[in-house]
Length: 180
Image (tube, rainbow, N blue to C red):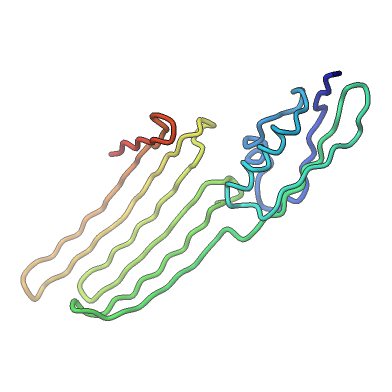
């Protein structure tokens, strides 16, 4: 059969997400041979990010062995807020977090957590890049603080914590994540 090539890919419906992030998740690019299976796999890649509710494509302008692909994406909410309160043997606890899976439309995830008790304050900020430099590997950076005040027993402590780790596939479905 005659080979058909992708002339251009038009992306519609991305009001928040950067076009570059969407194109990085496509297997077939402009100039590549058109393949329905690879296009379906590209749509599955986009759905698996958790940023899009639905993805569809339509082939248009089929002429001179060139096709245009119209890719429609439907974005969904990617942020979450949580709060909690409790009381236990160590006293009262108030906690909250704010998470976003598509920070500034780049596909980078962020998480902010804070926890307060009578004697301790804990807070962390995590930034997770699930496709660091288009490598398919994950880079995670965290910074946090733990401030403990047990003045009644003569103990006070403040710690600032910084962590970084890099996760990659060592063998098929076996991942390794070294960190500092």
